[in-house]
Structures are given as structure tokens and as C-alpha cells.
Amino acid sequence: MRNKEVAEQFYLIAQLLSLTDENPFKVRAYEKAAQVIESLPEAIEDLAKNFDKLSSIPGVGKSIAEKIVEYFETGKIKRLEELKSKFPEGIFDMLRIPGLGPKRVRLIYEKLGVKDIQTLKEYAQKGMLRNLPGFGEKVEQNIVEGIQLLSVSEQRLLLFDALKTVEEILKEIKKNKEVVNIDPCGSLRRRKETIGDIDILCCVVPGKEKYIIEKFTKLPMVKKVMASGDTKGSILTDSNIQVDLRVVPKEVYGAALQYFTGSKQHNIHLREIANKKGLTLSEYGVFKIGRKDKPICGRTEEEIYKILDLQYIEPELREDRGEIEYALKGELPKLLEMKDIKGDTHIHSKYSDGTNTIKEIVEYAEKLGYEWIIICDHSQSLKVAGGVSIKDLYKKIDEIRNINKTSKVKILCGQEVDITSDGKLDYPDDVLKELDFVIAAIHTGFKQSEEQITERIMRAIDNKYVHSISHPTGRLLNKRSPYRVNISKIIEYAGKNDVMLEINAFPERLDLDDVNSKYAKEHGVMLSIGTDAHHISQMEYLILGVYVARRGWLEKKDVVNTMSYSQLCKFLKKRR
Ligand code: DGT
Ligand code: CA
Ligand code: CA
Image (cartoon, rainbow, N blue to C red; front, side):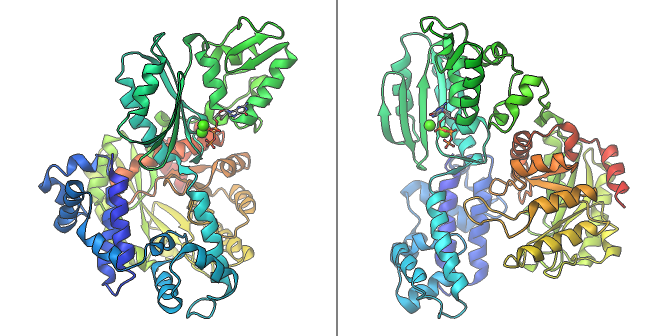
């Protein structure tokens, strides 16, 4: 799939346009198109074969469709090349610094002539930017932090992107009938929120090891072969992702899978348990100490945990956060599974900044096999995201009531209600009371102190119409640190007041994260998993929320999405 690559071209057009005096609506249109392309479930290169289909995708349209076709035909987009030629190359890097918008980049470039990241960093550190209009010491500090964040984010990949890459690779490799078994391992198998590199393990019919490694190094997405040996290959993909493939014998496949799944800390702890039993454990199997010749087991992971008198430990738990102790006692949680999920608590529609109508959303939900969905749009004051006025909100309630008369999947009318800078909710109580579901969220006032932000969220929890707090820390992976908030205090307060917290499943949010989700469970907080979808295809992100929940030790009973429609309605009413 080349969706991400194509989307990046349009993001760049939007950014470069905003360095000029172009109409902001045009900029927004390119951004929107990029978002849509990025989240399309189908490969853009396939869609591009049919121009009518391509240009009828909501958010794409004729002019953008032409540019997509042009890109596939010529490898370039003329409009983008024109724009690029207007600016020095270093400006494109400056645009990638998190938290530094195009407006500021333009000022820095035009007023000071700074045109690369290195110089920018020096200027910021020496306090040479603070006199620009709208700048100041804080902004300089943010720029330095942003540049640091940028170099970290170049190294770690979002789980969602890693999953897509690995899916493509597995599909290709599995076409070779010599492959007996193949699994991703490493942090990807543990479903960590970001991935350093992708590790894949496989076993093949004897004698075909090198053959498979060669096939792997010749896959279409390979940009560079880093290593190619008899049983191990290492490549860099088009999008600069490192992927390692190892081939091991069938007899020790489980031992190798266990070893290369990690985490390292989990493995170290596991080896201590083995040693106490007079055993050693490695990627080649379990051995009696001093008997290196023949492993006593290693064909499957299950038999390894069994011989150590442990319950089988799911990969998501293998972080040495107590799972080994629990497995010894036989008390591991029975983790949440995708099949337990009956609905999504956070979907945007056209009423605010979503791409789809409620009808389209509910049809898609039926395809996903859901029993219910909750449509949560932005509240009135959030104008940049199409916040819904009170008048339109009543229209939305009516529309939902009407669709519910015939729809198999039940729709609840929710809203993602802003917690204003002074800690109030963005609709009065008599409006909130008309909604089936209210999630409160912070979208403004990020610069406030920890006390202020924590206090704002606590006041929202006090409101009896609020059911859940959306993306409680506000972090964006690789882009933005959490706002200053005492999250343990929020979790404890939510637990005392029976308010839920959200696991926002949007790939760059995953907020709450695994560790905080576990803390929430321990404090009696029910979690709501919401995709924050702005396009129906993004409803598929729900699985990412399930992964966070699993890494947070959550069970079916800890997550509101496992309730049936009638249970859910009763549960939500109880709060009021
Ligand atoms: P990443 O790639 O940074 O997201 O994290 P991992 O966990 O995938 O780490 P990676 O790719 O360095 O290694 C893959 C697995 O191999 C790791 O999870 C456990 C295993 N492993 C690597 N190095 C060691 C080691 O020194 N000792 C042990 N016990 N296991 C190791
Ligand atoms: Ca790895
Ligand atoms: Ca690796």
C-alpha cells in the first residue's frame, strides 16, 4: 500500500502552501485529502486505476485525483515541485518539527534568514528568536524540545504503521510454499505502542533457509539490504523501517519465538526461574544444566512456560511487570479480546469534523458486527473542529432517533464536550442531560500549570452528566508530550466518583496508555475504548485500543465496550 507515501505529498503541499499567502481553505482541503488517503482501507494505487471512483472519494475530488494519477504516472506532482522550488530544502525539515507551525517557520525564514534545523537550534539556544512577534523564551524552549523529539521519532514507528508493514511482508513471504511457520516477534508481537525495528521468525522445509532469506531481501518494498546470510536477513523498507527475518529449525521454533518476543527483562527473569529448577533457557530450547547436547523441549512456547511451572503468558504481558509472579500462582487475568467488543464509544460524524454521515457510520458498524455505537462530535466552542451548536445538536438527536427506528445497530447520541480553560463544560447541564453519553476533553489551554489542568479535569468528573474523560493526558506519540496533569490523581478521583476514562485508540494517541490503564483498573475505574474515528475506515483502530487494554491487564469486565446495548443503557443512566 502506498497510501502513506501519497498522503505525505499532500501534507507537504498543504504545509508549503501555508508558507505562502494562499487561502487557508485550500490548505485545509489538501490536509483533509491527505488524512482521508492515509486512512483508506484500499490501496490508493489500485483506486487510482479508476478515475471516477478515485475522484468520488469524499475529501478527494477531481483536482486531487488528477494529482494522484500524475504522481503514479510521473513520480512527481507538478504543483508540489513548483512550491518546493520556492523554498530552500532545509525548510521542509523545519516544517517537520513538532509544535512548530508553518506560520512560525515563515517568520523565522523571512525575518532571520534561518533555513535549516541546525542553525535554528543554535538560534533558539542562544535566545535569538525571542524578539520575533509572538515568540518568547518559552517558544524557543519548545523549539529545542521539538527538535529533540523529531530525532527520537525518526527512530520509533507507530504500532499501527508497523502492523501494516508486517502484514504486507507476511502476505508476500507466505506465498512461498517452503514456509512452514511464520510469526512477527519482538515489540510488535507484544503490541508495544511504538516499535524500534520489526522482527520476524520463520521455519521452512529443511534446506530452503537461504532461499527464503533471498526471497525476503528481494521483496518489492526493500530499499536497502543490510545483511543477507544463511539464516538471517535484514532490510530497510521504502519508508525506512528496519525488518529482520530469522529462520530456525522446527524443533526449536517455540524457544526462538519465546526468546525473540522478549521483552529482554521478561526473558532475564524467566531464565532465573529456569536456573532455580536446574534448567537453562535460550533461543535453542530448554536444557538440563550441563547437558547442552539435547533440549528437553522448545517446539512450542506453551511447553516452555509449562516446564517452568508457569501459566502461559500472553505476549502483551511480557514486560516483567509482575506477570511472572502471577503466572507462578496461576492468577493471570483472562485478557480482553476483540471478540468481546460490542461497540465503539467515540466516533465523529459530519456534524463536526468527521467525513461521514451518521447513516454511513451505522452501516459500517453493521459490517464490523457491532451491536451499538456512540457518535461523539465536538462541542460548540471548538470552532476549528466544527463544534456543534446547541441548535444543531437537537437536530442530531432527532436524526439519531429516526435512524434507530429501523437500524439493527443501535446509535447512542454522545458528544465530546470541551472542558473550557476555566474548568466549565462547553454545554449547559440542561443540554448535557439530553445526551446519552458525554465524554469531556481538554483541547485548549495546554500551557496551564499541572494544578490548573488537574483541577479542570476533576471539576468535569464532578459533573453528574459526564460519563468518561477522553484522551486523558493529551499526548500525541512522536509529536506532543502530555499536557501537565497529575494523571494518578485523576485516575484515583475517577475511581471514587465512578467516572470512566477513555483508552483513545487513535494510532498516535493510545491514551490512556498501558501502564495508566492498569493503574485505572486497580483503582476500580471502568475504561471506555473509543477510536476517535473521523472517517469510517478509522473505526478499525479499535483493535489498537484492545492491545493497550491487554497490555494493561484488562479483562472483559473492565471495559464498557463489552456490554450489550441494554446493559450499556442501564449503566449510563445509573450515573445520573
Ligand atoms: P524494539 O525493537 O526496540 O521495539 O524492541 P524489541 O523488544 O523488539 O527489541 P529488539 O528488536 O532489540 O530484540 C528483539 C527481541 O530479542 C527482544 O524483545 C528480546 C530479544 N533480545 C534481544 N537482545 C536480547 C538480550 O540481550 N537478551 C535477551 N534475553 N533477549 C534479547
Ligand atoms: Ca524489534
Ligand atoms: Ca531486532
